[in-house]
Length: 123
Image 1 (cartoon, rainbow, N blue to C red):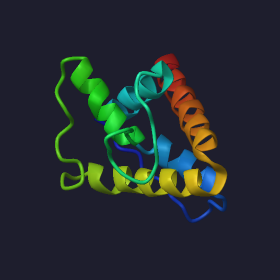
Image 2: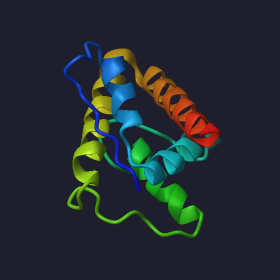
Image 3: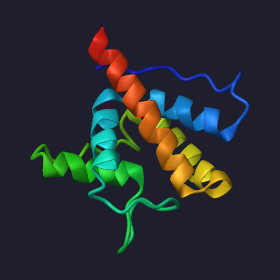
C-alpha cells in the first residue's frame, strides 16, 4: 500500500485543502469512499462520523466495505499511517461543508476521487 504525502503549505483555499486531503487518502479508503458517494446509497452529512440519520464520507466508506463483505477498516485513528491523513480529510471536509455547503464539498470529493482513481487505473 502506498501512502501519499500531502503538503498544505502552498494550499490557500478550503477547496484546495479538501482536494489535497482527498488525494492523500489511503487507496483502499479512497475506492470505498468514491463508490459510497457516487452510488447515492448513503445519506451524507458533515460534522460527525455517524448519526441516526446520516454518515460522514469516512463512515460511508466504512459501511461500503462492509457491504462488499470485507468488514470495516481497522482503527485508522490509531494506526499509522492512516491517522493523520484520515483526520486531515475529516477536518477539511467539515470545514468546506460549513463554508461552501455540503453539496459543494461532496461534489469536490467525488470529482477528486474519480480523477485520482481514473489516473491510477491508466498507469
